[in-house]
Image 1 (cartoon, protein in one colour):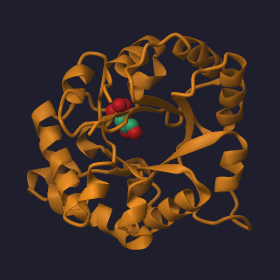
Image 2 (cartoon, protein in one colour; image 1 turned 90 degrees about the vertical axis):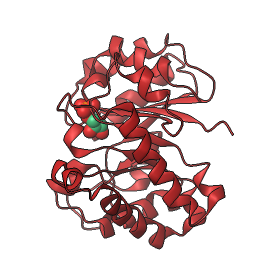
Image 3 (tube, helix red, strand yellow; image 1 turned 180 degrees about the horizontal axis):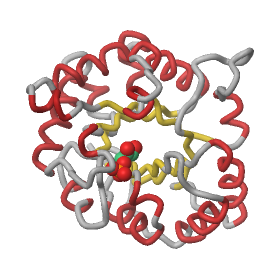
Length: 255
Ligand code: 13P
């Protein structure tokens, strides 16, 4: 089965209006393989500008807009939070949930992450669920235990059928922003574990879920990473801020 592949740009707290405009016009002439989607996730204030700029140039439907976070609540007295309906008003289709920076810096627990995934799905947004182990956990050979503990609460919260609409991004924390990428073999072994973990609950869901790799992906290593059987694209940080490099990564993905 040919799974869809996704290359998602996580701009984190970077970027500007100028980058929004230049990225949209650069993306308008990138060549994508069949079954590949590109998702750009700028900070909240730039979502509207990205949406307008992409409709001005008629960006093809393979390009989507994503947010980096969402509230688990629908509305109300939650200062500083952003709801699913607000995101949808600005043409957002995807949302990153549970990024390791939110888990470690903002203390988001796997229970909260599961609630956010539930809120996203209920609104028709596609969540990109981030999971990954720290360096200490990998050294202690706890990687699979950690990943299972991050996946299970989401499956318990939403049920396995709905998990078919989740995109999983495996991002080893030690590879984020460090230039230390997991080797293609190591990434594949971990992706295979994730797919088998889901398959033990429901094989038909496991074959559908796109599994993205994230952590120091760049124009040089993307080809080999994306060639792995269970790697269906990437979640790109630093390299997604440079249009030329990001375009190479987008074109390397295969559905
Ligand atoms: P880098 O590509 O900068 O390592 O960041 C990865 C990441 O955290 C994407 O969500």
